[in-house]
Length: 184
Image (tube, rainbow, N blue to C red):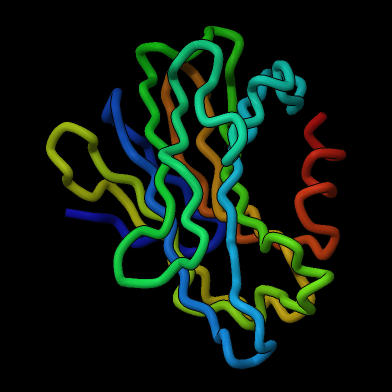
């Protein structure tokens, strides 16, 4: 049975292989331009910095060097029900230096298109067992991000040899570049 998390809550992930599903709906009519939301993953070490440029996983770099993190591809429209983008994680392959995997969603060309997360609704992140498809946890973002163009949905981190998920739900208005500056 899935656990529904609130912002700031943490939950252990006891599945060695799991998938992170991300979903959202947009108000396309509000700007006249379609939305393109993108999931990005920062694979980091103890210092809270990405291990290398290849440990920044996004639509142009789909797999981490160790093969532990795989982005399944960019969804350009976000239309339809269910997950809009997915990231597969295999903890048995993860580089031993990795202590955190951060999940960020950004709006592509948000500034040019005058778009922000205030125009996005029904956003969620869920984690499900890749073998059984059983949902382990889900976090629905309920905040109103009226000026933010990037949101850290959650993070997976390792403490005392146990992997946990934390529901973060924190936005930034500088977009993906702010997160690249923070984690690089």
